[in-house]
Image (cartoon, rainbow, N blue to C red):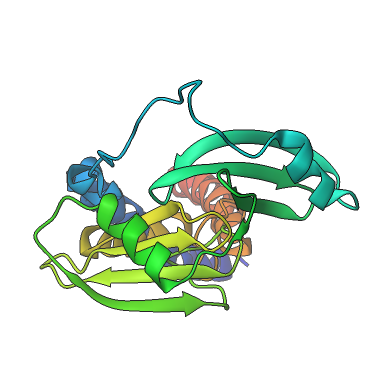
Length: 227
């Protein structure tokens, strides 16, 4: 029995040790990467097309917008400047809808609007190389409602912006530094599919195995001293 425990302890310690090395290496790499570059914050441009709402401007009144949404439950409604002009942003139980504040027309965020949103929020040297409408989930834009516009730039970082198709705002900024970070984040959390779960079966298994190693190692140590 002790021979089996000793053999299992030896081989299991190699497996757990390898994961410990991955934890240490991935943690080191993530700490060495510049957090601002990973998040794309150093290339954020703030839209200069921002002006104050004045009393001289004439807009569609809130009740006129609400009349179009009688069958929906309105949660919030605010006027904001997006896509180059003032819009009514309405949050309902079905999601976000934009209406042109000048005429009450419902706004659709198409490729042109997605390009404008990406360009206004980008401060790098690259140009837009590709614009794609995403209707299936991706790891880079995980956690966000679909559809999304994927706007790729041709800079050296391969910067990619994800624009919400519901209201034309940038929801994620991705680049090669983030992609490297994400791989090591996956190794660190041991979530090889979603990459955001800290309670995967792998982590739980390693935890139980580590406890078993401590107990079996203690038993082997006692037996060694006794001998």
